[in-house]
Length: 571
Image (cartoon, rainbow, N blue to C red; front, side):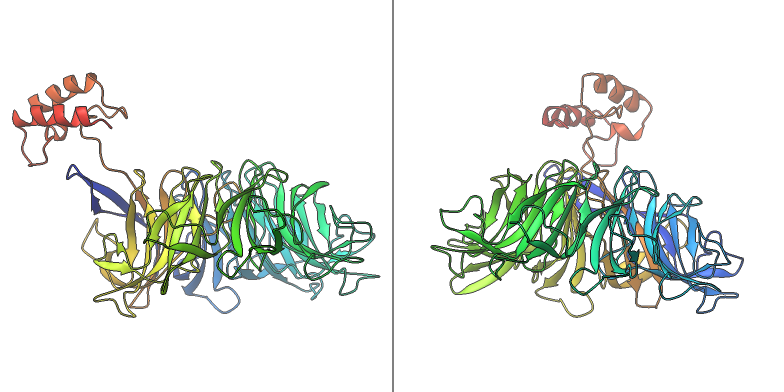
């Protein structure tokens, strides 16, 4: 069942409201598609979305025949056309010997993935007569109904002498060409704590080693090895970015941290502690990259957080955000930079891990300082134009409240440069029941409220009103698109989120963030042209909706002058 609603969220200068349309994709108590009669959705994990509006999510179940062995599954599809992908207790795809899904995992921060081809990627645990602790972990990829195992415990680990995958503990990354990347530990002869982990990527049947702990580290001096390569991201071309370290002769704590990027087999050292930090004075070097993950975009550009050391570096300017391709990395924001449009003397002081989109725009949350206080904000923009999208203490649109502490909140960025974020609120009337909200930029680039805890939400407005009070929200963030990561918002300004209600029910909700309607475009061709005058005359003669250009609810000659004004304003 599809449930639809339209909510007016914000007004433009002409007085015409921009609209956000909501669809309840799945609701507690709804029948779970593909499950036996009497099996219903009970709760949900944060959903994800792709470019065409296909949605995927993990859900828990209740009802007839449901037990702890079969009470969760994964679903995907367009609203109203969901289909089961995998359910605990069911026969596991691409396996033999009566093996079943024992657990379908969504580790915190590493959700299942869904690419633009409609393929999913997820991590699961198997059970069956011959399953052991050594081969129970597996990663599946593919379209619903045609899943295949990409990697499984006890499988040969490509790029190693004769070792096997052992523990695969994080959901994969999956790009739009169907290539996936994942991390695993290893087991076999000669494996020690110094060489027991690695990163791999590829398609089913052609997985290749990206980097293994203990192997020669690309860009290092002779004898310097990879130390603990950590979770990767992957572009649509298959290029990889990951963080790790060097070990071996000549490596010190101030020269060990590093970031690598490139295609498997042709990686490049993108940044290393002890090396010059682009965009900073002579002698200033990277000191570390914290514990934050670097990002990549569809054009193989990377973005990362870094910390600095060297001449002139102080606690007020010792970190920043960089982006670009290896060898062409540029500084985007540095602690000590002024906050554009901020308070007099306000500077940036700290950053979260950035995301980067195909337009080379970055987005991140940051801390700021102006004596004697600090505050926080969300920032985004291209080279030389990173500006605040939201600042702590300033009005939060559609709420009557202010933005609260925005650091270290995660953000996401679409290919069209639209921000989405889940943040806290503060100010008059704000309490523990209504202090969180999801915001995103609509088609016009205006930041609008998507949903707020404490507000009533009609989950079925097409029939009798069914208002439920939102208790908690979650939306998938940490992506700039084209990076193999899970997304919560696409370039069509569709955002999908989970809402939990005070009555104990939950829902998956799709919001479409339209821009302000262009009234002059009466014929609906996407632009205001003289042809729309003829369309308006036809609407006038037929008392049709396109006639009302001044928003007074009437169709009369005054709307002709209003159309001229709207036409001159353009679309």
